Every structure is written in C-alpha cells, then in structure tokens.
Image 1 (tube, one colour):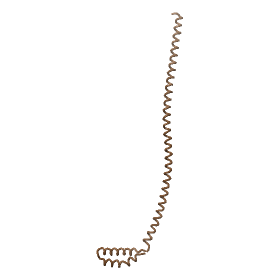
Image 2: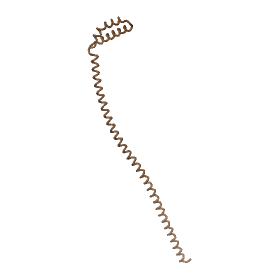
Image 3: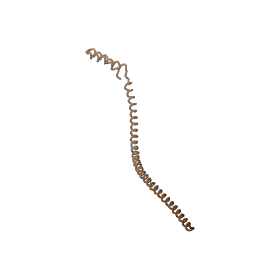
Length: 158
C-alpha cells in the first residue's frame, strides 16, 4: 500500500472513530434526556397524586373544623345549662337546710313544750287497756277504765 492509501485509510479510521464517539455521545445524551424525561414525568405524577391527597385532606380538615366549632358551641350551651342547674341545686340545698333547721326547732318545741312524758305514757296505757277490755266484751269495765284514765290524760296536755 502506498503512503497515500495508508493516509486515507488512517483518516478514514479516524473519521470512523470520531463518528463512533459522536454516536456514543449522542446515544448517551439521548439516554440521559430519556431518563430525565421519565423522572420528570414520574415526579409530576407523584406531585399530582400528592396534590389530590392534600386536597382531600384539606376538605376533611375543614369539615372537622366546622364540626369542632359546632361542638364548642354545644359545650358552651351545655356548660351554661350545667351552671344554671348547679346554681339551682345550691339554692334548693340551702332552702332544704333552712327548712330542716326550722323543722328541727318546731319538733323540739312540740315535744318539749311542757309535756309530761310520764303522764302521756300513763294516758296511752290506760286508753289501750280500756280498748282491750271493750274488745273482749267487758264494756262496763272498759268505760270505767276510760273514766279513771281521764284525769291522767288531761295532765298530759300542755
């Protein structure tokens, strides 16, 4: 082969190498762009899914905030009712305490108002005895017992 032919072959080989390198670079660039495009599309899809999920969560959260507001209003209303009831109970308990105190004072006055308990006991015993006599047919004895117990019963009166 001549020097010219060798030089042509050498140039052709160099051209082929440059073409192969360029093809390799172009292929790498195309693969890189395809990879980036795939990653971009996939990322955009994920962002779309996340946006949709966030929109649903926001709607639910808004509904819960509304329910929470309604619940707070109900709690306020019920708290007011409870405070009213507690106040009413306190008033009633105070009234009951005053009434119990007055009743105790009246009861003490009734039982201790110049009553002779022994005379009252004697009166009741005599009346019971007279009624027992009458119930068994001793009418005369029962009436006599009632007349005998009369002064004892009068002594028992305040």
